[in-house]
Image 1: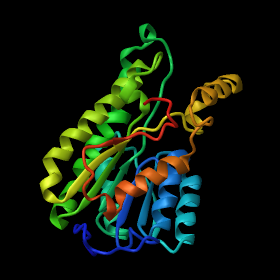
Image 2 (image 1 turned 180 degrees about the vertical axis):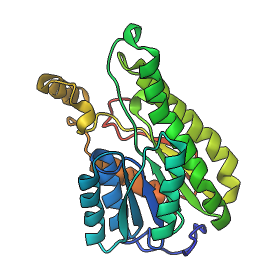
Image 3 (image 1 turned 90 degrees about the horizontal axis):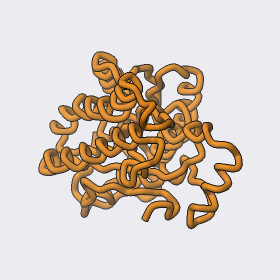
Length: 261
């Protein structure tokens, strides 16, 4: 793998990630699938991680391959440490050591704080904080050896501003932001950047609990007048994953259409 850790080095604007290996968790649908496709278009080999939806993950991997990129679907529950180890090993075996990690897999729950029990809190913390923590730990040895790496955590606008009736979710995503900033300071001297993307309201399955009227109101409350798309998030991830972002670390970029400023 050609290490690209010199910001003055020319790179292709059409394939800025040529020679890179990206591991995207939770990439069988929604934002994760959009990120996987976008990174593949930019030249990266992509490991499409999934939990249950094997057919859809294979479909996303084949889409990545259609852009000329190497890609494979890898099943793993990223809340399980043994599964994380196997995920990274399979990625390295078939594609090479990951130079880009996108911690996208996560879960959301909506409800009153007073009704949030221990099991619900544990579920959200495991998926939204524990999993990214240990996925990053698993890929770091290879990045440290190469002197180059990009770790990108998908947080949420509610991790910044807090969301009513999403207290546990907001807490888990806020913790992910703090993790991002701390790790960025620790590994920055080693040529590794760590950033987070905190999307606003994005048209995915995570909004299925909202009625069509609620979605319309949410669009109207967003200054740009619409909900976001997975492509909106993927564009930010692509920038952070590219050599052009070599001076960006510990930052939280929030594609939210102006919903939170």
